Image (cartoon, rainbow, N blue to C red):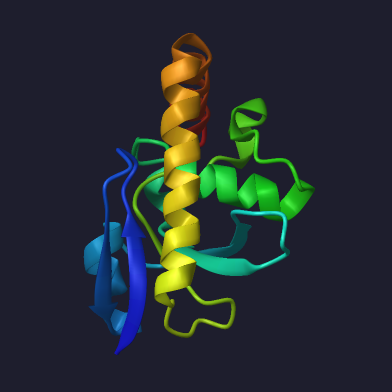
Length: 142
């Protein structure tokens, strides 16, 4: 069993125990993608497991996973700037090598959740535009 941290697009979260072949039940489909994510400038990265087809199936965008992806890729957590790189649907965060995620790492991701929540609250209109762009980009992939 692996310990992971499940985060939904609505920013609800919980620690889960799962086998890799069971992850699909949490992600709404087969895991066919993973990406490195970061939530601070300390270069600590995690792996986000997600269903790559979630976007084309009109799943809600996941702001915290998108924030983490942008931070890992560019060093800038401003996820809203590039809707083409957004991750949609629920995400399971695990250690950088796919190992269990530790409590201090969960707390770092929770800081990312707080940052995303605050950004959405402070920039409601920008968030609505980003969300709509992500959903429209997913629909174009049919």
